[in-house]
Amino acid sequence: MSLIYAEQLTKKYDDGDTVVTALDRATLSITSGEFIAVTGRSGSGKSTLFHQLGLIDTPTSGSLAVLGTNALALTERQKTAFRLKHIGYIFQDYALIPTLTAIENVALPLLMAGMSKHRAYAQAAQTLETVGLAERLKHLPSQLSGGQQQRVSIARAVSHAPALILADEPTANLDHESSLSILAIFRRLTEQGITVVMITHENEYAKLTDRVITLFDGAVTEDVKN
Image 1 (spheres, rainbow, N blue to C red):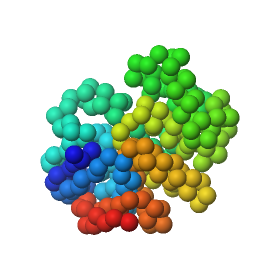
Image 2: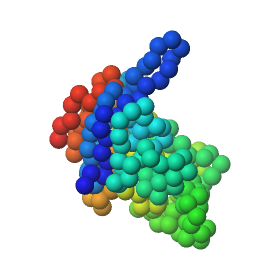
Image 3: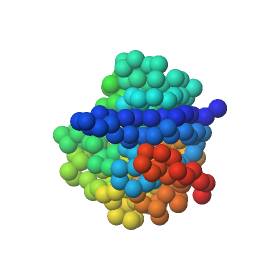
Image 4: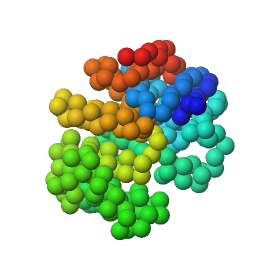
């Protein structure tokens, strides 16, 4: 069974007197443990697809199943609970809370999911250790390099053991060495059975994944294995 199955997924926006089709009848299937790159030029629909697969937005038409659940049948409250339990998000700008330490940033979604403070902080510390930040638990984001901040973001995304990680341009603000270290972490996650879907403009990094899905004008134009 597919971890994600989208069929004829379409998203349209009203833009004054015109209707913009940001995602055009996209059909794709992703299984557990795959490392997927989604590529395409700016405006091709990558971020729109990210928002649909992550249950952040609702498509105009089509169908979407994530972990066997009809995502379009969920209420907003159910979507929030589903995201907190099953999906981890990683963003280009790290999206860390600047006034919280690394361990506090990672523990926050665990606390939001109802975990006790003691367990949340213990799990956050353990996850930060797995991404090489055991010595940076009490550092603020401003005290960390870009690569370290992205590692905190990854730790936050995986701390609740999700089935799916969605990463939107996670290497865009990093140097080559830091980018490769982030990709190595993603590869280790997939070896543990976690699915990683990464939006990227970098063909060099896309080639290091299992499959590359290419979008053009909102449509899937290519889906090839590396």
